[in-house]
Every structure is written in C-alpha cells, then in structure tokens.
Length: 211
Image (tube, rainbow, N blue to C red):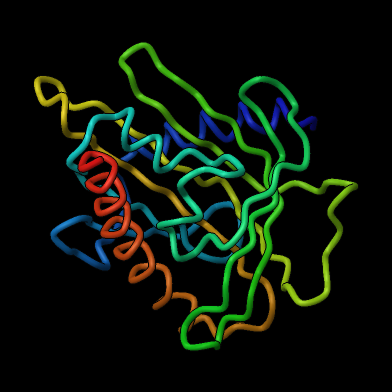
C-alpha cells in the first residue's frame, strides 16, 4: 500500500475512533482532559483517547499542534525532542521522523518513529493530523534509539459553535514503544503523559495569545 492510501485509511480510522463511543474506559481525569483507553485492534496494546477543551481559536491550537519541522510542537511537547521531514509526498501528506527523549525516570530510553502524516481540513473548520508507522529507505533504525511504531494516531481540532475562542481537541495514541518494556510501565506512562500533553498545550496556546 502506498503512502497516500495509508494516510487516507488512517484519517478514516481516526474519525471512526472519535465517533465510536463504545468500549472506552476512563483512566485519568484532570481539569484539562479526560483520558480513556480500549484494546487496540492493530497491535497487542491499547489505544488511548484524550478529550479536552483548550482556550484558544482552532487556528491558534493548530499552530501549536501542527507536525512540521521548525514548528512550535518541539518547544512545548515534552515527548517530541526532534521532528524531521523525510519526504513531502503531496501538499498534505509527508513522511517524518520523530525523536522522543528518555522518559519514566530513564526506564524508557530515547525512541524514534517514522510515520506517514496527513493533514486534513474539513468543511466545518475541523483540522486533523493523521499518522501511522511506515518504512522509509532514508531512515533505517539508528544506534542510540529504540525504533518504536505508531499505529493509527493523531489529533483532531474541532471548533466549538458559538465559542470562537475555544477548541475541542481529541488525541489518539496507540504506540508500540518497542524494546522490552514491562507492560505496567507502558500502561502507566500514557495516561499521565497525555494529561501533561493537554496541560502543556493549553499553556502554549495561552502564550501565543499573550504575544
């Protein structure tokens, strides 16, 4: 399957996650987000869903979330150390490498991920990033990093009717971190990491508004 087909499939799947309310179990709640999970159908792990409202227009929220080299994401997202463009496939589809720092007090070593990413805009103003793992000839596994694999994942920014300065943000993560990590470490990492993701996103959007 080529990159374009894969990207289209992921975008459809992500919309399905958003619409399908069945089987999700809440695992973390904060002022910023509700995080829930259910078993993945793509790998022997879980898919995690974050759902929260961010104070900021959809454009501002997307500016912070947009997965592009040199973008704001590496500045505020503690789980993104580096973001590299490997290939621009079409105007809205790219193949990228993401580098993540060590986490969980060093238990989780630095990782890298190679994904096809599609940016979609919908008629109601919704903007989404849709990603899944791919193999790219220019980026084989590298020493110093454990190669992880993102299965269908991404973020969906949804305008809230009548509230132009608020945006509903859905995030979906289903990541095979690779390596020999105990399941308990993985299961505890994602809910807390996603809560931090929303908290840091809210701060990043606020700092944009203040300038």
